[in-house]
Amino acid sequence: MTEPGTARGPADIRNLLPAAGVDARNRFLFARGQQLAPHLPSSVQNLIMNLGSAMSLARPSPEIDNWIANITAATGTRPGRALQRQAIRSYLRTYLEVLALPSWGPQRTATAVSAEPTGERILRLAHTGPGVVCALPHSANWDLAGGWAAATGMPVTSVAERLGETEFAAFTEIRRRLGIEILAHDDSSVVRELIRAVRNRRVVCLMGDRDLTGGGVPVRWNGHPITMPAGPALVARRTGAVLLGVGCHYTATGMKIDFSAPIRLRPGRGGLVAMTQELADFFAAHVARHPADWHLMQPFFDRPVDRVRRTRTPAAPARDEDRDRSGSAVGP
Image 1: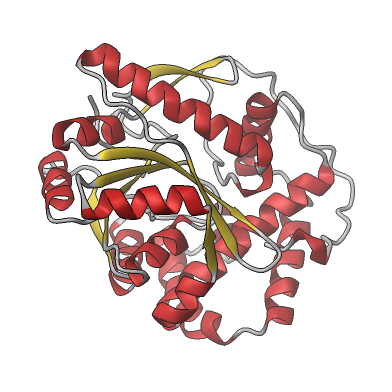
Image 2 (image 1 turned 90 degrees about the vertical axis):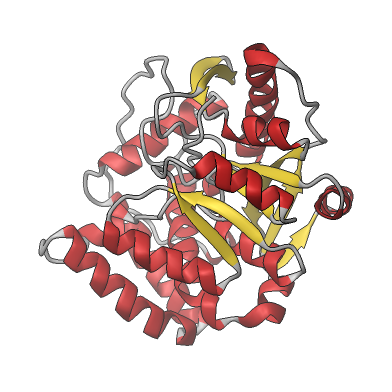
């Protein structure tokens, strides 16, 4: 389930490379990463995650400061150093997995994911019946979730943020190889194409927390006023599809997918707001349970949050027990 949405852009990884321009660095990362990631043993992946988390926390980072502010607002508690390390490890794990995913094949992709049984049953019944729209926060590996759906008989259509042509093309190709059809968030026909996808019995998966266009609807997240995209609610209502909130988090052995109860479709703009509020409530509860896996490193909350800064003491190595996009651009 991609950004099953935005083109993922690992700012901290890019900053470790020489300043040769974002496009050049992205081309290097994508080309070399796709060659190397499928062959990295777990010990090397752990080394990358440990070093990456230590290096990222050892110097100023607006992205990490944004994440700290977001988690502080989302949970009511400022994340400590250990949770910060765990979050960066989760982020790096996701990036390594995304690069390796096309080489996994359907069987490995399917077995890497476990899904909450009741929610999965509703998902599959809706897929063969009225259709289904899934809305996700930026948690864990939404591309793996989309690959799991496609590998188990449910082809996926999603929307990706067009951050830059190089990134967009690279990640669109990765997702295509996973069985995920990607539409650009700034395509004028995106709503029509999503409706077509539902009617063609494709699972429409949209990142539902970050409002990319500024045209979202007002909701509250843990008491904070924000806007979230109305796209998932809008597409579900126009097609009569079942609307589900979907949350991903890492476990010691893979990734788990949880589902909300089906969200009742309601008419009018007030209906869009009410449906989106239910998604916000599900997302907020999911992020509170699994804060390290929420990879939202952009400013998110509308209500001013006290600027949080990390105490920049030397980072301790992350522990192995740490385990380890759609910003839907569809407006109301």
